[in-house]
Length: 458
Image (cartoon, rainbow, N blue to C red; front, top):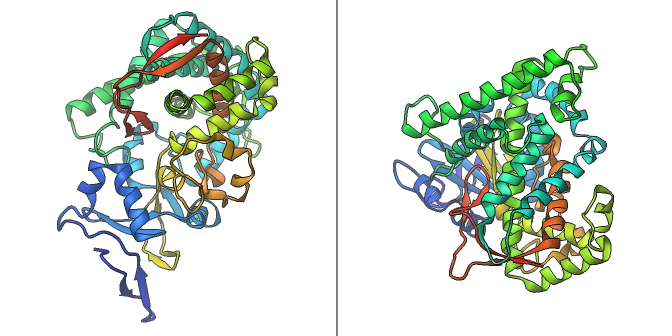
């Protein structure tokens, strides 16, 4: 479809220039190449064809955008002309009208209602819970033990979300039920289609049937907790209490049970999976870079002097913060996202017809040699030596951007730094000899077969 620059006619007779891209198969276009290797295919396309790449997935036109200005155009300057991509709307439909999936005026109202629950001051109160959960986890670790660290990080961040959102304690039946249901839901996105191309949920495949049962289980739990909390009128100091209390400044109305369910489901899914992956990849990178690990330890000794980290320590944990930033550059938990054009527009000099699906990939952009010296190298110092201060704004966007910037950004960054500091104080994590860790671009970027590592007690 897009082998070389193509032109079509505008109503005024002037040419519409379409972007270049790789030739594809007659029926499926570029879909098979994409599904075989999401990350490699998108990277090759960006390097070979430039800032705007024309693709076709069966009969759907898709543009890959590989320039910070183009990302900013979609997310900020003309954001009302774009909605979530068709694939994301289908795949994430079970989130209904949560902040991740809703659009237009409804999304703007929900964002306005939910924002106070995620203010920095409110989030800071959860720091103690995060560190406490981390302490409990490492209390069960043993020197020279081999563990699936990705699984451990998932359980840890799930406990933190469960406690800060709903006040659900570890070990309760509710916690086990939430963990099992979320694991089943996440598995739906680990196939070749990822989050962008899924068999519609209504098709009764075995995977879809398991997925529906998991969503029903989670729904039942969430609605039960909401009903009990409304009946008690208790302010438990968690996010649910805050969401129950907020009122729209314009109408005076609060959230319905359905709106609360949608936001809770979104926080459960996005709030634990992303941070778990960020931490997992950080352990992987530290194990291969002892000089970085050594400098991290030096900072932790100087700032903390052996005591657990607190929210008040965050401004002094500069290098710890740089380690997390660099890890999220190389292995961004949100590795790509999509949008759909509502009306014709132009990006980078190329015509974008209404209905075109756009892909913007943090994985591709964060490793672009135009913006990063030695882009494949894990070098946290780049975030403190001034070199990244010259970056275009959307050369690094692990949390998205524009009006739809991730509402949980402050929560996630604080959680990752506190947990990295706490766990690193007590254990060094070494790679398991002979084990190859491969990224799997699912709903988030996770290690394909987990991440087995050797624990070394300090």
